[in-house]
Length: 338
Image (cartoon, rainbow, N blue to C red):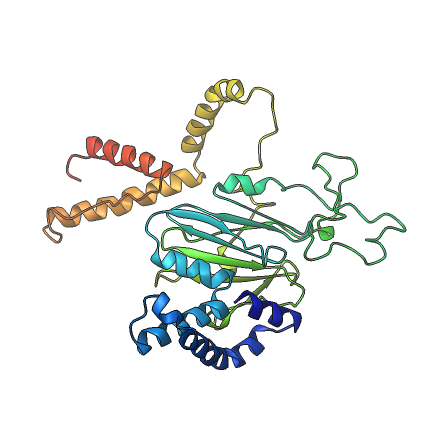
C-alpha cells in the first residue's frame, strides 16, 4: 500500500483519477494475495472472503480521508464526544470538529483570518474587539502579499481593543460570528483552507454541501448524524460583535476568585433589577411560560389530558443538566399538581 501511495503521490494523482484505477487495483491485489497464498495467512477460508477483504481494503485506501473516517468512527462509537480530528497527511489544510453530547462552538473572524473553536462558547470570543491594523507603506500586505490562506497567523498583527492604533471604521473589518454544532443530534464539521477553493474529500462525501466562508478562503461541510433538521444555515450563525445578547469578555485580573466573590452583591442586584424591569427578556419569558403552563393545567382539570401525563420536560447536558434537576425539584415543591 505504501509503495502504491508513493507512486500516486509522485504522479500528482487526484481523487478523481484514483477512482478510475480502483477496479484495476482490486484485481491486481487479488492476484497478489492468491499467488503468494496470503489468504491462508490471513485466515480467509474462501474466495468470497478473500474478495470481500481485498475490496474493503482497497475501498478503505481510497475513501478513508479525514471526514469519512470521522463519520465512520462516530457512527460506530458509543458515548459523548467533543472532538477535533486532524491527520498528518492533511494537517496543513483540513480539520474535522465533531459534537455529540458535548458542545463545540466555532468562531469565524474574517478580517483576522482567524478561526477559534472550543467546548465553551465564551472561549471563542477571545479575539472579539481585535482589529487588523492598516498596512504600513512598503509592507508585504500593502503590496498585495497578505495572509496566506494556509498560514492564517503569518504577518498578522493583533491590536488590543483599547489600543490607540485600532481601526476606527467598521468597514475595515468583517464581523465575527459563532456557529454551535448540534451536540444533541450529533454533527460533524469539516474545515478546509486549501488553495483549490473547494474542499478535497473522497467519493462517499462528494454529495455533501460545500459552503464557502471567510471570504471564500475556507470551505465548510456540515454532516448531521440524526434525521433532525437544523435551522437554515445562515440563521445558525450568532454575531459576536455589536450584539447586545452576547456579553464581552471580562478584563483579565490578578485575583479572579476574589473578584468573583466581591461581585456577588452586584450580580444579585442585577438579577433583581432585570426581573422588576418591565422590558427585560426574563420577564417576557416568565410571562409566556406561566401562560402556557396555566393553559395545560386547565386542560388537565377539565379531563382533556391524562392525569399522569408529563407537564414539563426539562432537558440539559452536563452542567446545565444539574441546573435543570434543581429547577424541576423547585417546580415540584411550588406546584404540587404538576
